[in-house]
Length: 635
Image 1: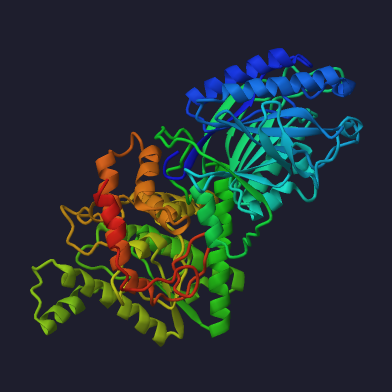
Image 2: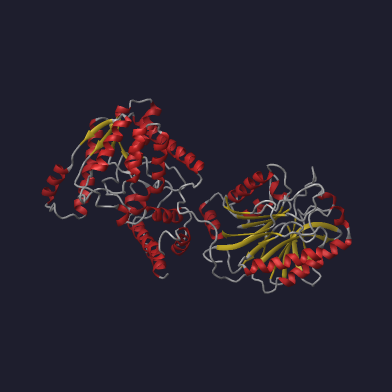
């Protein structure tokens, strides 16, 4: 339990049907095992003390009494175990039998949650034995004298970790049109525990998986789903022990079917609460009873997988689909702008680098959609003091292969004249030396656009905007920025996707070489003909900065938490000291460069993050980053 993470366990024991003594002993052993492993929330299957498949034995007093006795033994076992446990059993109240989940923690039953919906169709006949739990709201005295609440509307609240609020639904509850988990989440629950006994039929597991992932996403919560497995009666059904831990629409851990056991993961409850803060449509109500409990806070190793590239799907097919979607969004945005302005030409500066390559490919697609002649795309190369043969040749080859108009303007003479006009020594390679070239290029593009009734297409990407890695009123400015919400790590995949699908071997080879070229503004003279100025040597690796950017903007994580999860994601790739160094650089640049983002040109949002001052990101240009940097300094 650190930084908002809580370690959880989903446990399917190999029970014996109706043997409550055996099952109780087994559950108690697994309680200790999971607690010793550091799990703080441990969930067992539906009716696991007796078994789900007892049939009419549920009407036998001996089974009911014995189950209650085993619950008391489980309660005693929980003393000194630093976790909350959810176990299922049949429980009689006022002559009615209920299918309940008992919440057990540190020698106490915190509450009993009855099942809301009882399936009584196909192979299920729960209404034969149990009573619907909806509307039940009473206090029950246990055999040990403790009085506990019995209700479907209980939320178990961890006082030592306020973001951890757990509610329960039982099996069929989740499969209904109006699952109780909706009400639970809207009342503040950040984790849903589902004690289930879902039998296996062909294809059911995939639907179950989709259902749980979708529910955790829709409700912005963690979801622990635990099903009965081997040990249940196979008289008419087979149970697969299909356990799933999900969070915010993503599956964190999943058991193999037909293998009883334990799965662990960590649910980020702070992230879930942060997401709810961000969504003003997540309207929390207050109609549940909060039952407090406390757990010890201690550090633990994060075992869940954390991607190094949160903007990029790791599944190849999903990545292809994402790239195609983004190309369409960029192209459709530009298409609309060209139509609206009745623009005759699109003017774009081509450097032979990644960003201008992507912008050109998007522009070509927009023109094809409009059925406009590609010759009305004016691709301008502007060699300067840092231009290398490699990038120049790639730019020219790309322009020719795409069939757009080619214009070349050498900027060296005009920039040297500018240096003379302002009294700058051409041998002084400072920010004036660099930015003069960037602004000269932008002036050329703007004037060509004016001359040809055109529009300047911006090439800068989201990562550069976050870091302020753009010359103010230089490459920072355009008439429509097609890459404005595309991070650098995703730019690479978009260009690679186009190369793989364009069907032109020559163009593919050029694009692949662009991908292999170091990222550089090429504003300093080459070193023996090769690029001397490498962006990532100056501002840091873009894969790190995009990781930081995602968690700063998408989830609002604190610097310490971003550092900790970055250590997990990049273990073996970067040293911890390197990660911390570039994280400090990110925050310093992020806060100091907002003034460039406050006056951005229009551009389409393509993913979950944008820094448009008219849309997703509205930040004062003079906000202080002190408290964020102070946290990093204190690590």
